[in-house]
Length: 444
Image 1 (cartoon, helix red, strand yellow):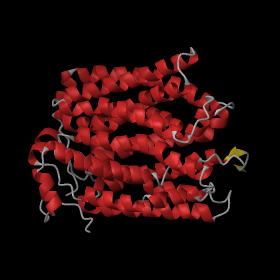
Image 2: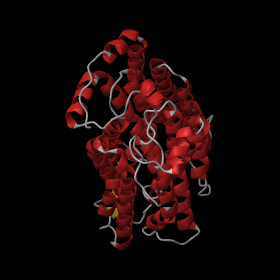
Image 3: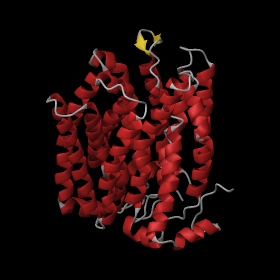
């Protein structure tokens, strides 16, 4: 079973040849299943430990779980910074094998987490996060630059919405019903997903490169060397700064809700079954995917860009309305978590499906989506690490208090920046003048 991804000139497998001839529905279904399953499985190696509370352990007076989350995200963040170069420059033929190698290293780190006695095992979660931060950029590289990229990316993004809740439910079941210890549980959950991960990555490796028609509509996607990355950023510095600032805020919001879901649900007074994580995220996923996937049917790149920014603003308004509804006693804990999850994930997923994809196409850049996502993710997760270490200074009461406080200010600040960006892209001269800029050289 070969994991070498097909290129325009390389021999093609029967599956690749079939995908070249397949209908848009069949092609999309295949790619979504492969990408969704790959990234769903990756979460089984990243998130299960957050289903535990580690309540009986502390490190230098800090909550041990907060330390574990912070060090894993620190490794994940460093991985994103590394990915700015590695993902941007990686040739297509190495992507699939790289995904399996990176996730394999993460599972070895989880074994170390189980074997090294606490509290000295926390560095193992740094090593666990270090390879995983590059996986998303590799997976999305199979999907970008196509007329159906929004649909394919929406299917991929469904995985990181629903998978986190699902693997936490599995982990919580192991702890509560299976009698598995908190330190062995993450490794065992990962082991369950090794075989489906391998199959999904193989499926992903069979996808053909974008067609000639895709290139006409979305521009050619190519590796980017250091000079071309720097030149790209200089040309679009103001726009990228504004877009990344919002993305940073959204990353902090959705990560806090995700990593401390057990504590937030508890503080809300909801002590339901472990399945509550998966059920709430299923509703969030359905709403987010239906809303964001619609951008694929908007052909003009500028119109799609405006649509995506409207989605960002809509999600931020929904965050504020969710906070208001809970404060007024109009929302029960389940509805509050679903609605604020929708508010966080609608704009967050819009970035992955449409914002960066159409930005490249709108400006006619010969670039790649992995570069922009790694830049934004690196900034976002770095900020989240800062929040984790500053948490005792920000609020002493609970994670719910911190979540509520940050949600309000994130929504207000991001709405202001988003409104400015919407006005900017609504002026046709901004798109046309940027598109006229010369292109830089790229890695061949």
